[in-house]
Image 1 (cartoon, rainbow, N blue to C red):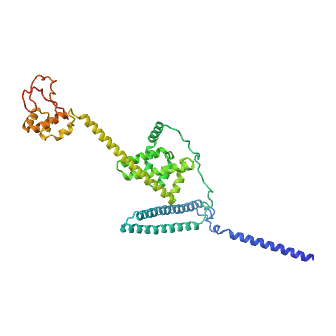
Image 2: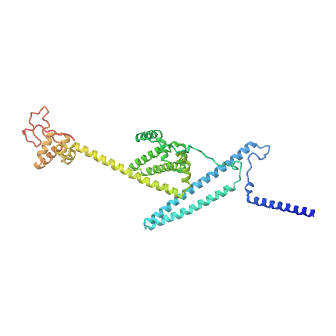
Image 3: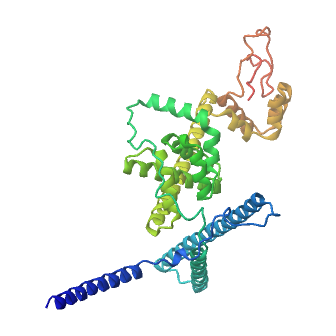
Length: 409
């Protein structure tokens, strides 16, 4: 009986052991160890021939591997960038097609052209997705090495996440701060305003974080209006684009209650990810802003023209003669012969010309000259020949009037 119990106990223990082995096998199946089968060993672990310069060989191997990795990285970035551009262009074309359909434009040729472009862009997007998948598979098949075997769990840069204090400044203090900031950073602000690519703008702001503020946006807005006033529409649209970039960064910082400088990288990461809703929001705000710029520029032009007209009217009022006529306007309506007399200040020739005219015509022109101040009867009374009688402009001698004079225009 004792022997039988011992056998049963042994069988029970064996069964438990087998069950544990099965469990371990199942666990082993759940973990994929195949990725460890193809690891590129460290460059300095190989045994080399005694006649070979081992350090030089290891350095060459290491550099060759780094070159391969750099080339693969550049190829991946290039494909990602071009794929992103294709996605953005595809979305813009779809939007353009929808607007064309909703606007009721029945021009079939234009509609067919856009539909054809849309098909080409969809085909291009498909090719870029396939290329990205191909590169991803190629990357998975690349052997691990000492540099890629492990990576940082995370990497973070902290820049004063507390929200900046809102300063209560007067208009005069704000203007002074704006002028000081522009005087110090105007050159870099203009450089930023001319960047067209996302990567270039992001890199430039990372190198010049002091530009991420309201003062930069204010300067760019004024510059955009100036460009539109000068009819430089293309440059205005470029600067307007950078204004919206700056405003989106500042709004992101405000919503996260963080320092705007810490939001540079998050904004450009988000905008380059081609998030449809975010991109639509960005370009919608950009189009509205460009419309406001055009309106402000037109208002400035209209205001300048109105001020110029008012200034001309003030000058005209100041020129009016005793009869309320403008000497410039009267002079321009005179016959050429009389204009020449006034320009040369030849009184005798003027008298002769007046004498040769019809009396009614001569009286009409001379009355307008007197009313505008071009001709001042008796204007020579204060001069040395005040007592001397001279002929008047009509040629009547001894009429008792002093020598006529006139004012030059």
